[in-house]
Amino acid sequence: MPITRRTLLALTPTLMAGGLLSGQAMAQAADPRLSIRAVGNPAAKVHVEEFFSLTCTHCARFAAEVFPEVRSKLIDTGKVYYIFRDFPLDQVALTACMVARTLAPERYEPFVLALLSSQDHWAFGKEPAEAEAEIQKMAALAGMSADLFQQTVHDDKLRHAIMDEEDRAQAQYKIDGTPTFRFNDREQVAQELTYEQFAQKVEAAAR
Image (cartoon, rainbow, N blue to C red; front, top):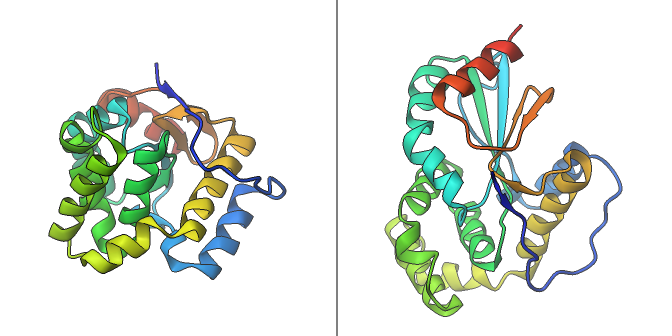
């Protein structure tokens, strides 16, 4: 079963009117950090969206055990366009998400995968300040300066924009846990998948 969404800290009222796509378009126009983060060919027959949280152990296991095969057999071969949808389940995940989105787009995927593969080092059993310090170390390795890191983690506009997108996804698609996958905007699966299950969903979506 996926992890259910936890209440984020510092929530403010958000506008729920309009669809997810229109909300994203408006946000992207205002802030390029909110533009789509994806890998693969946008012209691929199947588009897969993964709603994930950087502190979700199920997401981490999928990233480690299944995603490499998805990447090599389905994304790199042009069959799937894979879209990452941030759905932070707690404040630590939100901070990490903000940092990931502030990096150059081409660094988003490797940074996210690095965070997911090292959750034990930064995500669990630490005070928020300790977790933030660990995230900063990883961000520095990805090329983010200390000044930019501090600006990012204190950027309330970015924080609330990400939470607004999360709220829109929850309202439109009833997403409340991670990982959740959507295949061609037709089928939605709220659980971990094996590669075989994932490939079957892709095949069905391509018909």
